[in-house]
Image (cartoon, rainbow, N blue to C red; front, side):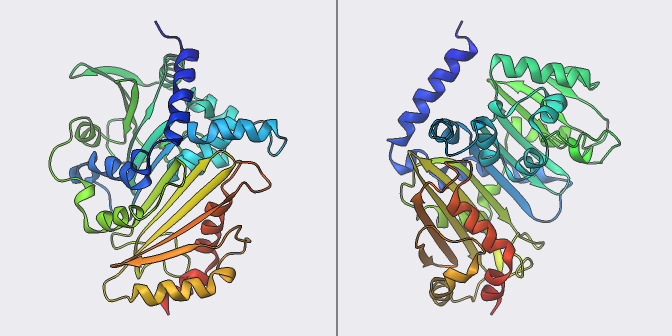
Length: 358
C-alpha cells in the first residue's frame, strides 16, 4: 500500500509536471467550468443572493513557498500560505482568522491538508469537496466523532451528519471550522473516491453526489466569467480561482456592489519565482466595455492602495473586461501573490467601483 508520504511525493511530481503543461491543462477557466458543471441548479434550493465559487490547489503554492522560506524571504510556514492562497472564499476567511491549532482542534485537519479543494455557496447553502489522504481522513473522521457526529451508510457511501434540519443555523458553532461550523450550519460529510464531499443539507449532498439536470455552468453570468478567463495565457500553475455571481445581490466591489458588475472572478498563479494574477469583470448589458477598459488603463496607478509590481494587460470583449498582472516575487517570497493583493486592494478601496459606475 502506498503510504501518505509516497502520495505526497507523487503529488509533488505531478505539480511540477503541471507547470510545463499547456495553459489549457491547468487554466482557471477550465477549473471553474468543471466546478460549476458539477453543481446542479437544484443543489442551491434554500439559498438566495450572490453565488460564490472557488477552486484551489495548495500544492501549486506549497513547493515554491518552501523555496521562499529557504531563501529567507518568508517565514517557514509554507503549508499555511498554501491553504490561504488556495482555499475557496468562505474557507479562506476562516483560515485567515484562526490559528492552525484552532483549525486542527475543530476539524482534525492542518493547512497541509489543503491540496485540491472546491466550494460553492449561496447564503446558508454550502457544498464542496477536498482531496484527502489516509492520515487526513483518519483525523477528520476522529474530529467529527468527537463533536458528536453520527455515521450513516447512504447508498453505500459513509456519511457523517449532525442536526436534523437543512440550511438552518444551530447553536453548534465552531469558529475555526471552515466547513460551515462558524455559522453552526448542519453539515453532512461523505467519504468517497479519496475525497471528503460535504454539504449543508441532505438534498444538497445528494445532488452533488449524483448530479442531474442543468448546472451552474449553464447560467449566462457563469458563462461570461468563464469566457473572460479563457482569454488568459499561461500564467503558471493555478493556485486558485474564485468567482462571485451577483444574482441580484452584491459582489465584493466597493462602490459598485449592486451593479453594474454582474460577476467577478480572481485567479492566482505561481511558477518558479514568478507569479501571475487575473481579474475578470462581467458588466451589465449596455456598458461600453472598450471605453471602460481604456479608463481603467489610464487610472490604474491610483486604483489600488498598493504599488503594482507590473503594468497590467487590460482587454475587453463583449461584456467582459480581463485584467492580467505578471511579476517576479515580491518581498514576501510567495507568502502572498502581489498582483492578486493589488486586485483585492482595488476592489475594496472604492476608486475602482466609482470609476465603473461613472
